[in-house]
Image (tube, rainbow, N blue to C red; front, side, top):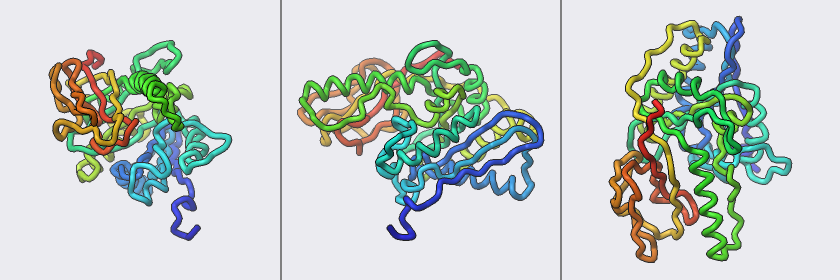
Length: 325
């Protein structure tokens, strides 16, 4: 190893505490190394706290500006693998992200709320991803939906999306069936909870969490979205003593309901899709390598289209309108 080896970089969190009791908040950036708007937004808020321009009056906030140092140094989404999949501690860490998880998961468990800051590949407007409605199910039992919805209304964005973990679990089940039918011997991550990332792990520990997709990776406005969301969160939770931020209304609410994988590297989209492009039932989305046309099964939206996805990885998601907000 050399001195510039990213695996030698220390894990880093910075904690600020106010004099009065209050909520324990955690804010993360660069869970994916090429998504740096959260890092820049966090650095800006930390500079204000260090200079005394912003004061923490209650509770505490822990900032993790760079969650995945290896991916960040390499300026790509992942170091060895996607940190935001199958996130959990490991007794026998093999990949860099396993070591991150062994540090990150206990840190998450020390807090009540997580704001996780991301960006996305194609142009589009920012949106917030919320957890499930309150439920006592086995996949993602939850009791803080009202808290998440209240904060989601005050981040400064006007689109909210839910349905992540159950949609991903259904996709894993289909992936497992397809792999078995094809007689594929490769080792795939096919556990139903493979979709667990930072926010899902926080909820599994009894907390609540929001993922804010701040804009396109290279859009400088995404940094302002991240910064404003942090400031609004601190105010909304009463940590800074500032007036509560305004409520965004109306909010466009969507629910993810299906994830579609590539099955061959040469599966191709019919056009250059962007997240939240509208779909009508029957619209041509793409064509499989063997010539099979892939069409929209219902009216809705395409989300997270990835023309560069590898075979047996997520190609795109579908979403429907929701009455949640």
